Image (cartoon, rainbow, N blue to C red; front, side, top):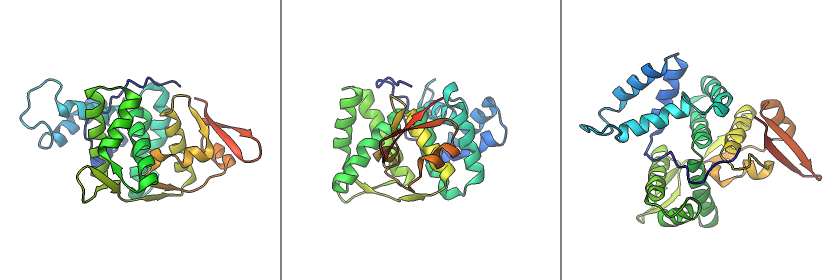
Length: 249
């Protein structure tokens, strides 16, 4: 379950509707070639317009979209399948949580930036881009690629509406906050979050209340309900009131 902290991967500004369109194409039964062609058409007037680079921003964005909902790492296949089922079953208002979870599982860097944003929002009600950048570089290294990727993840949060601009440049405040009360979705989000953690485990309360879920108000869930909802999780009881949730596959 280990993750190398120098792996970033998510280095582009990605809009929520692009992920939704990708998932819909996959749900419609399209193969990778057809999905790629459709995304090229979708993005041709939006990203790298007129660009001739072999690996321009459009290609990098499409790689992110495909890796999130089609060509996931093999250990995330069951999470992807369940995520697609949730997209079919749940109303559109819940889809942001599903895309958020899938992106963080595939790209833990997304979760890493969210943790820093969430901590700052809880501490002071706002998050300065410079402070987020500094904390992310402390974790991932003093590299320009880290700074650039963090900026683009923050812009994605703004595009998704979970952060908003304040009156001061580079200072962000909380955007929309979404309630999550479907137990199956909560269990799936918990599993996604564990994939983004180096050790694949966390106390249940810390998992649900993690700052990487700063856009969501997640309903408390009993460990037994978590186990019923996901065959990929196990729980170890510590004392009377602490449950350690473990990713088992």
